[in-house]
Length: 345
Image (cartoon, rainbow, N blue to C red; front, side, top):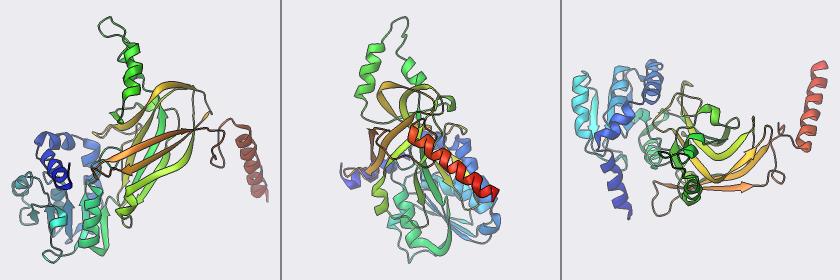
């Protein structure tokens, strides 16, 4: 598939109103944006805003309702034809200018520089679909030097987990056990799975893998992310059956949209790397791995998620570390002793 056909297919997918219905039904997603915008109404008053990938226009409407003087609603799919009707229906048609093309195709000399850039660009595990590239293009070409980004920070987290519901599906299909197929199925999986992981199925506290400052990150830096040797310490006994990945984005006022297993469910759910076999783990046991996201050369909107299991005894641990290894117990005790001495002084 060439680059142009990839772009065409991407925008055609967003012409399906079912896709927008799914996103608009996601209350944590939509309310996070509304609250972030309305809690900073003073920053939107009489300002010029660009909404990249405006979809049905709801974020553009929020910005107009919050007091923006003008909102450029940029949407390359045919759904853009509906935005003007939505604006009129909500009595903000004089504030919203629809631009029915990709943001990369807008001549920077044709529109004013904007004070605020708003976009809901996130995909599964944050980066799937590669729309962040378009947001960064808009930032570099249309946002004023002191302008605001909504959101402004993005983070990717992970935690080992059990997959009880995912695995138990094969236990009893109308009275027939297919557990042997379950093992074959897990070994055959070539892609991460999008699943809802209950909080109780996570085996450790979440670990920050990737932190992006959207005010400064470049598209080149997005080509390869993660890749550091990572150690996570289990906080209970269980079966290590997958590695859950999710994201959180932060707005300029500090409010967040969190897609973790502990947060209210979203349409993004969690992205899970399913292990071919379950591994019994115990409380305070360290799990070591390397996880890297590399942009797919053949389709830049996708990433290849590479997972490598490491030997926890040979991998460097955080200091202090709560695992049961002797070196970590000793170093943690030493740090606590030093802290007590400092407090006494």
